Length: 239
Image (tube, rainbow, N blue to C red; front, top):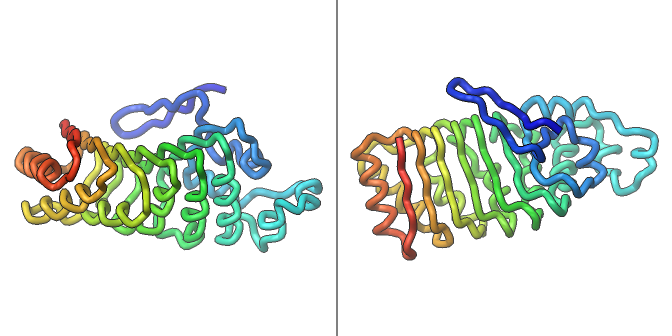
């Protein structure tokens, strides 16, 4: 399988050879192919879900009842059951959500079902508006998630640390790349933002690359994270 190339306004990102878009491996997920380790989910993948048709053998497979008897593939109940199938993949370690709408009501239960996964270690959220993302972050409560990366995400809530804190996670690394944040303009808002992040006591490394902080805000962020964290942490901020 060839690596997947994804073009952005500034550069092309190439995913590893074991990366699969959900739309291309949907049947493999449904039938629990445990060779899948790295999956990307895009809006086009959700369209593919809406077009999925069970085969005759699928209809006769009782373990697939939630997918074959649901009124319409791709709807809320169907996607909830797909989340269950994703959560049961025993070797799935990396999951990327690219361009999805966190407020999509059809995904309301999907996020939480993925969180049952015991194999997931890394989550990536790309090209998303995250002003409201509490339900989406339920995925972060998967017990072995240690790394979360947000890339080219806009208006990330300044309470994202608070939202993650209530997911009972064991994060060690949190990365933001080319992201903008809501309500982080004043020094007071930066302090509040950093304090919430510092409450994530399992984290040992924070990284901010090409994010929407000027030099003064960046220095304030670094100082507050170091002062408020109960453990020794690494904080990396680069333009």
